[in-house]
Amino acid sequence: MIRRITLATVAGTALAALAGCATSRSTLSPAGPAAGSISWLEWSVLIVFLVISFIMWLLLLWAATRKRGSLATHEPWNIGGGQSWILIGGFAIPFLVLSAFFLLSTVSLKSFPVHDGDSMHHPEIRVIGHQWWWEIQYLGHPEDRQFTTANEIHIPVGRPVDIELTTADVIHSFWVPRLHGKVDLIPGTRNYIHVQANAPGNYTGQCGEYCGEQHAHMLLLVVAQPEKDYQEWYAQQLNPAAMPTTAEALHGRDVFMGAACSLCHQIRGTEAHGFVAPDLTHIASRQNIAANSYANNTANLEAWVTHAQSLKPGAEMPNLAAFNGTDLRDLVAFLQQLK
Ligand SMILES: [Cu+2]
Picture 1: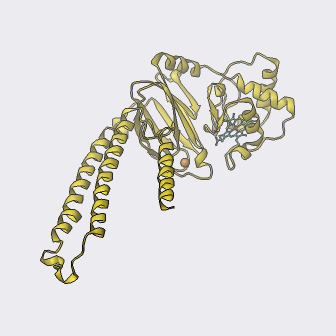
Picture 2: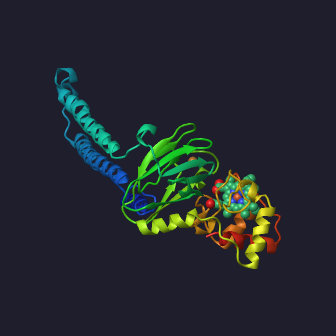
Picture 3: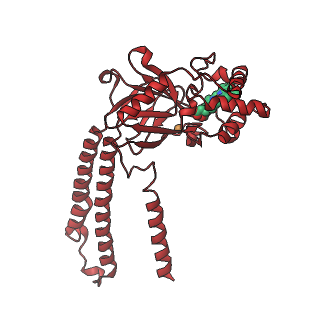
């Protein structure tokens, strides 16, 4: 019976632990230099402390099972009974191990640059946290190389990208575990970070600082692309919104402009100039909606536009349920051609 319980516990724990290894948001599979150095530190701490724990278990076992003398034959600790155990095991070894890890963490912090404003003159991207989505400004030079998007950051692969972090409301934290460590977005302050991905791919991130009701649905996507694809994406994002060509999309455009949407959202090249919500100029080019909480497809767009509060209760987008079938269909058709 005890053996079974032990086996089940060990197997269960191992499964739970292994399940954490393979996700797209695991610090255990680093894909950039900063995450690499954090992961290296993580493994060394884990291994050293496992070895120490193993030795402790052996000592405990030995103490519990050895043949005991009577208490009277045991010297008091201050005249030699176990004094050296206390000095070496309780002081010298922990001092050495903890000092070594203090030094290692300091070295690892150095490879994870967070600059102050002075040393970071020209960030390429500014990320502004909002409850509960990410505003993303590309700060290209000259000014006509600049545009704003949301929730999905594209970076070229293989070189560091300088990102400035700030917030429009409360404290958030920028964290893409496979690429770098957490850096907070703090009101009235700018923080800086270098982000680099070694291989092309999608890297999921998550707000790392509790920021209210929908904190858990404040996800982020970093898409690392070869330089050429990245430049194509960049050029495409600079364009104003596509002009609708189908009758549905044209009608959908009127629905959008006639409803409250344009009070909050911007679509460059149209009369929609709201600035309190994600820029929708190229919404169809994004993989997900609602800060990467739902896939960007017809069903989810229809659900989101009419019942945002059911999908993300508390989000700053109201339910706009009062569309009839055709209006809703055409509105979504309009959004879907904003490539
Ligand atoms: Cu948060």
